[in-house]
Amino acid sequence: MVIDTVLFDLDGTLMDHDAAAEAAVLAGVAAELSGRALDGGTAPAAPEFDRDAVLRFWRRIERTEYDRYLAGELTVQEQRRTRAVALAAHLGLGRWSAERADDWFAGYLRRYRESWRAYPEVPDAIEELGAGRRLGVITNGEGGIQRAKLRAIGLAALAPHTTASGEAGRAKPDPEIFHLACRALGTAPERTAYVGDRLDLDARAATAAGLFGVWLDRAPAGPGPGTAPPADVPRVRSLTELPALLGAG
Image (cartoon, rainbow, N blue to C red):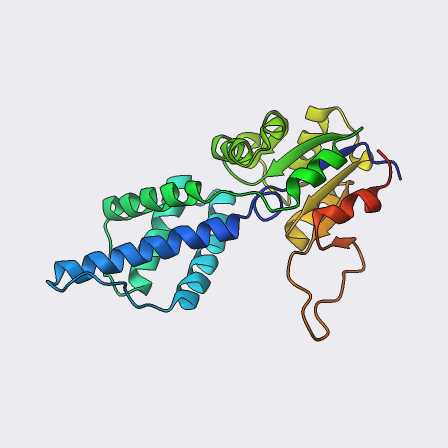
């Protein structure tokens, strides 16, 4: 196997989306609950709420509504609005209007952007993998914001080589988005690796498209049996393991 191109997923692979999203939603909920207390005439105080429950709800609604957007059922703004409305209902804040939901989500996006960070090992791994190989990104999302993330986390060199579903008209796991990226970089699928944090959507989808799919499993191993590695695709725990897996460029 000769791999001369490595493509990456973005959120959860290069950028710590979960940490940024969690910081943004928790700050937004705290501000909302503080505001409700002030409206009731009480003194401002740090609001009490179940942070873990909020995060579980937010992760679930984010995935379901974003998948609906990728399927063409909702626009970008509609999926944002439905998430905000659902969160307000979950918190007992009543039924928000579209304008109220859009305003809250705009604040969420500002806080989310402020928290964009690459995973610690990413800069060194990208530098090592880029020696003798072409690099790029395939991401389910809007091209503008995804390239802005790459620039913000110090990976601006990858921005011009990014294939985004919002522009391609195809989303992972559709094989065509992988083939579009390969054609854009002038590489053959069988000489291209694709690395992502979702087993089915990234690693297995890339493998089905003829690429060398790699699952990046960032879940801590911890005590006990843990998750057995899949038999059909290789698993790495960190991007630092990729050079050894892929061999010389």
